[in-house]
Image (cartoon, rainbow, N blue to C red):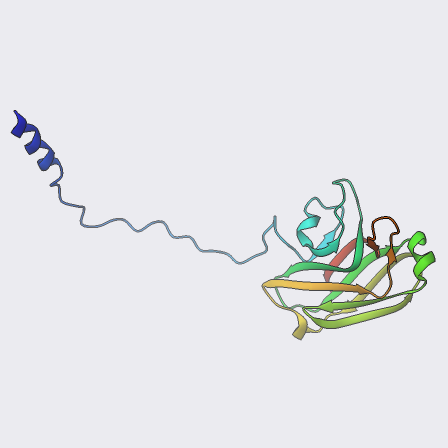
Length: 174
């Protein structure tokens, strides 16, 4: 009886392996922008706006349509193709900060290179844009934009640097 069980166990393990396996179904990856990922332009009223922020943009509540920035807000964008792009930024210089800083200068860097500047900006809403040279764009990759303000308000209580109120930024085709 003991040997009978042992023979059954040995016989069960002696089945030959299959000679072939079917090839798994192959899919072609189509290159395109991820609909839930980064894009070319961000409005800070978008739900996923925080995904574009690298640094120096203060978090807001989900219902905010703008965000306060520190001195050097840095954003990231995904550009699929090296088109004739124009970089645009919509922002406001608040009266409360402008009273302390006076006219403000703005320098825009794209992937570490100076894209453009704006000087003598006064209080109120601004919409600035610069033509982007093709050599500065990284196609099918993240592009980093840094907005550098020359003057900001340093809050007395906590020392937070308040720069601009950022509404939207990104790349548009010319």
